[in-house]
Structures are given as C-alpha cells and as structure tokens.
Image (cartoon, rainbow, N blue to C red; front, side):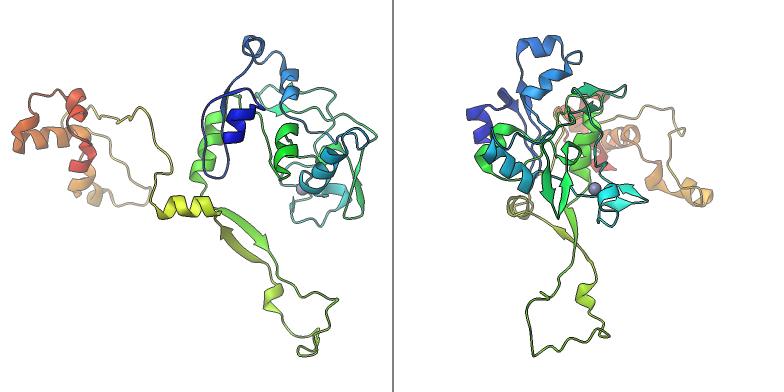
Amino acid sequence: MAFLKINKPFGEVVAGTSPKSILLAVEVPIKFIQIRIKEPSEVDNYICAEIPDPNQEPQLYKIVSELMTHGPCGLLNPNSVCMSSGSCSKGFPKPYEDATNFDKQGHIHYRRRSSRFYIIKNGMNIYNGYVVPYNRTLLLHFMAHINVEYGGWSMLIKYLFKYISKGAGRIRYTIGKNPNVNDNLQPNNSSDIDEIHNYLDARFICPHEASWRIMNFVIHERNPAVQVLSVHLENVQNMTFRDNDDLHNIVSNNYARKTTLTEWLRNNCVDESGRHLRYIDYLSEYCNISKFM
Ligand SMILES: [Zn+2]
C-alpha cells in the first residue's frame, strides 16, 4: 500500500485494502472521470495484458514470461489442471482485442493485439491470449505475480463480496518423487500405490491473513451500520421455513415468531429506560434489537 500511495502507479489512492487482494479507490484524471465508460482505452495507461517487446523492455519481458502468464491450456494443452469440460475454467486463452473495450454487461476486455511477440512456456509458444493483466510499474518494482484488474464496473459489489465471503484460498497440489534421484532405500515398484501421488486438496492462508484472524480482527464491516426493522400487524409477521418443515412446529415455535418489532415492544415492557425512544431511534442507545431476540 505504501508503494501505491507514494509512487501512485494508478493515481492518487483514496482508500481501500483487504488482506490478500487489494481493492483500490483511486482518484483518476478528470478527463477519465468525465468519459469513464466511453473511453476504455484510458485503462491502458494502468493495465496491460500483452507481451512486452523483448528488445525494448527485456526486464519486463522476463518478469511477464516467468510470472504473468496462464497455462498453457486449451488446445495447446488439453490436460492442464485448469481445463474443465473441454475449456479453461479461467477463460484462457483470451481472444485477441485490437483495443480495450467494455461489453454490454460492463465487463472489460483488455487490449490483446495479435503480435509477433511470444513466450516459450513448457515447450510451447504462447501469445497475448495467455497474459494475466498487470501494471508495468508494479511488476518492475516488486518482480512478483501481481494481477491487476479494472474494477469500475456495475457488478463491482458482487466481486468485492465474493472475496469477503468465499473463505480461505484453496490449492490442489501433488508431492512427487524426483525421478532423477536414485533412492536405493525405496526400490521403485510401479505396482505400489503411492497415496502421496494422489492430489491433495488443501487450503492456505498467507501469514498476514493468519495473524489477522488470530488477533480476531474483523474481516469486514458495514459503514454506516444498518439494521432492518420489521413493521407488521400483530401476529402477521413474516416467518421463514424450509419446504419440508412441519408447519405446526413452526407456528408453535416462539423463537421463530420474534421480530425486531415484537422484541422492541417486549423490551419496553421490562426496561423503562428506553421508553422515550421511538422505534427507529432505539438503536441510538441500544446496540442491537436482535440481541433481545
Ligand atoms: Zn487455463
């Protein structure tokens, strides 16, 4: 974050971060604000999804080659782990685009021109369709895999809450024996079942996320806090139940009948200190009506 604030590769940083992925609110040039959707080519100033010229930018080419390519998968490598039902689950290789553009849903398609530059990965030549979007300045400074995506689209809230609610990252990996190492203590018997060779499904938490959770810091919060207050006539409140629930049990369940309104009324019966407050003002002195439920 310090680098983003000081070096400003995306302009002035206004706010925002999360443990593993960083969501930035940035101040962009006035011109960009005025033509926000109409000039998607402005995104090219910050995000690139193309292989750089190896002669003009050899360092950047090296980093992109080693860290910012996906696959190969698709027709080049149908057995790649990302393949599902005959296509890449991540959508690679991306189609060529002469210019950055937005589709009708507001999704961005980065410029991926058909060029003569290519990268050799796993013995195969891959082109711009396999490049993971990156920022030139960030990549040259950190020399690490840093995927940068434009987030100014209408479904941003869905993207944001996906990262909050989807839980810890997961990885599928295998531990194998190096075939070049001759281990006399472990005679190679192809009929042995090597369970370690089976894929393991595991989750991983990076150190700062682990410490964040150990210290019990909040994962997300709402600001301003919002509490939905029920309004209903007596005994006609909404009740939630599953299709196969017994309705007699539901109706006789006193807990399920409780709403913020019934609990506000009930609490006023036993606690005189809050009677001067209207229903909508109750939270100004009481932390959470649902706690009474
Ligand atoms: Zn793939």
